[in-house]
Amino acid sequence: MVERIEKLDEPINKVLDELMDGDIIVFQRADIDYSTCELPDVKEYFKDLFFRVEVTFCDKCQTNDVGFTMELSLKMNYDQIANAVAQRLGTDPYLIQFFKTQR
Image 1 (cartoon, rainbow, N blue to C red):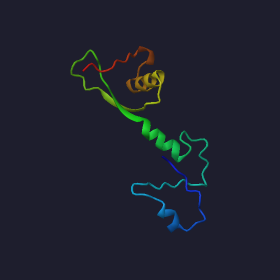
Image 2: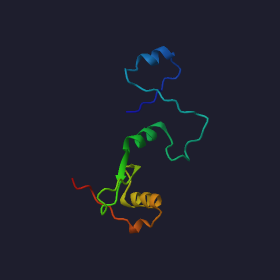
Image 3: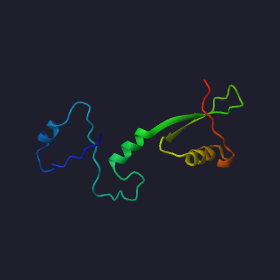
Image 4: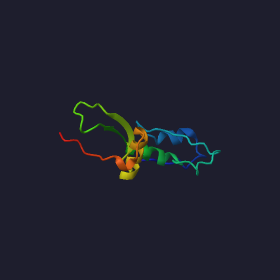
């Protein structure tokens, strides 16, 4: 959960008293226009971190292929994943087929 500290005119001691163990204080500069950024505020940044996963891709036809790992988002659709992998492999995204692991 991300909360904005609204009472900026109160003494810092009073604001800090409301914090609990494990809370993280993040400062966002007010003099920069973040509206053109991909992640315009702290809340969006932490949401992006939450949905980030490492995915390992390997060749299904080669039994001992170690493959490669990419950091992707759980919010990505099939086309976005295919484009990211194709760019990494230097190939056409429409020539790639994905399979789940068979364990």
